Image (cartoon, rainbow, N blue to C red; front, side, top):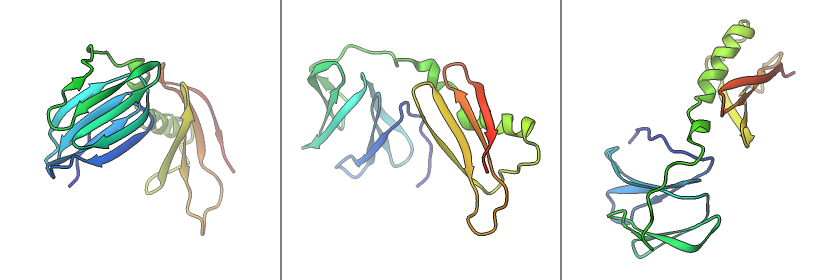
Length: 163
């Protein structure tokens, strides 16, 4: 099984849905249920998730700034206490394809560096993400570019060549 779902947030937990038809994804700003066929069954957005529980077909989320636990029926996606629809907070910060932007920048500013076959590494917090590449340990000589990108504006704020 292989497919891609765009999630928002920095962390992800994956759970089987308990009925063998799909899985649950809990991310920083909500949860979703996807089928093994790649279909989206339901999606719920929340404030920042701090704790997660799964028991008897109910997904429980404790969110930052909300004393009430949000409970989600795993099959239907119904929530209680009833949840008002929420928009993704700071959605613009996630509209930036950080890896694509870094690759474009590297191709322009470091044309001698070929990332083909190398594993990219993305780290950071807040509005800044740092992109670099893991070089082979055995026979690597030189270094890889390190590009820092502001995810709100999708602009490169600094770069250097690591040794």
